Amino acid sequence: MNKIAVLTSGGDAPGMNAAIRAVVRTARFYGMQVYGIERGWDGLIKGQITELQNRSVSDMVQRGGTFLKTARCPEFVTYEGQQKAAQTLEAFGIEGVVVIGGDGTFRGAKDLSDNFGIKCMGIPGTIDNDLAYTDYTLGFDTAVNTVLSAINNLRDTMQSHDRVSLVEVMGRHCGDIALYSAIAGGAEYILVPELPYDLDEIARSLVKSKLRGKTSNMIVLAEGAGNRDEIVKYLNEHAGVNIKITHLGHVQRGGSPTMADRILATRLAVKAVEMIKDETTVSSAMGIKGNKIIAVPFDEVFKAKRTFDEELYSAQNILRK
Ligand code: F6P
Image (cartoon, rainbow, N blue to C red):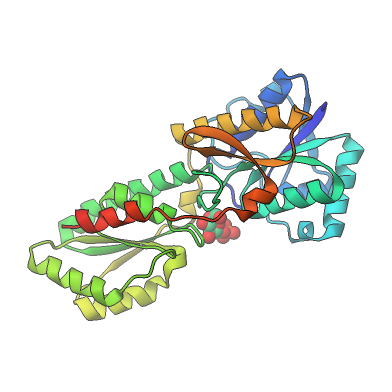
């Protein structure tokens, strides 16, 4: 394989730039030409493609976001959209694509590979950590640390005023950002979409904690686990509290990637390029399992079933005193 391309698609995640950098430099190391596609599948359809050199990715390892930009592209879900993309690749003589993104991005890569024979390698880039075949996705660690920093700040002011606080975090249908930030931040309650929760029980627990002399509590709510205003209204009424809401929003998607995300980006990208140039391999997604970098064919990626870390979750019941 002589010419490959790299793109980022879907929601951005810290570490994407570090991954693009490693893709470019690994490809150049192995003597390949490498092209950057702007704005994901949309840019591929429109031919927004430029050749990248080692210097094109200087000063990128520490930057959040993605310098290639990203977009969600409904047209690429159609056969016609994929056909246009395949024609662009053919016009540039590009034989393989490294795609960085989440579930939707990988489905696009699988279609391009199955329908048009273009070899694609996936790097899991999403803050949500919602891909079952890998222990971690790129950007998750940075997002959790961003949330953690907000929780630390909130604890200072909430303690000072004897207040209860609810922080809503991202994650779509996955509760991992909530779980990890709540445990690491010492929050008292975690509400996630994976497990049922009982607001009456939480209300009773808040009342009891006040009677025990604990006047400040922190609740972390995953965005997929319920409506924050309704939850707060219910708890205020039933526990006699006045909960302050913090909705962190897109601040969780930005920021300089942590060491863990930069290292993960580098390891996944090097493996992706080595896989794409090896003629014996099939289109696959890179991942990490037990600190080993793995490559999983796309078919298996979509069959994998997510498990939620209930053991870590239940530690909260022990620690909340
Ligand atoms: O998938 C990443 C994510 O940040 C989710 O956590 C969130 O639900 C969603 O994207 C927000 O999407 P958008 O940036 O399009 O509003």
